[in-house]
Image 1: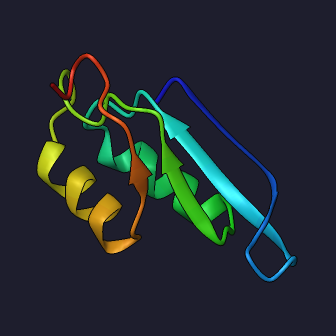
Image 2 (image 1 turned 135 degrees about the horizontal axis):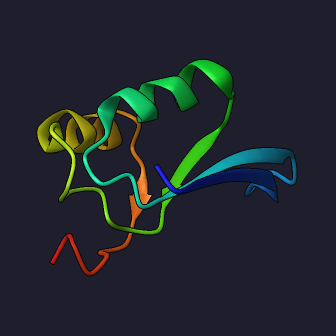
Length: 78
């Protein structure tokens, strides 16, 4: 996983929300699980490249679906 970061975003009710911003996971489910253990968040946003290169594309996609992540397609996802 190349980068991950988080910042505070204001929700509809005006309360602060913590957004987990991910990109370039490239089917590395172990790294995604490590981020899950290390961070807390209210929403997950993904900037693409969920699949390709790594061994676990299906678990990565299912994790994103289970966490209702907002995702855009990366060049490896298309």
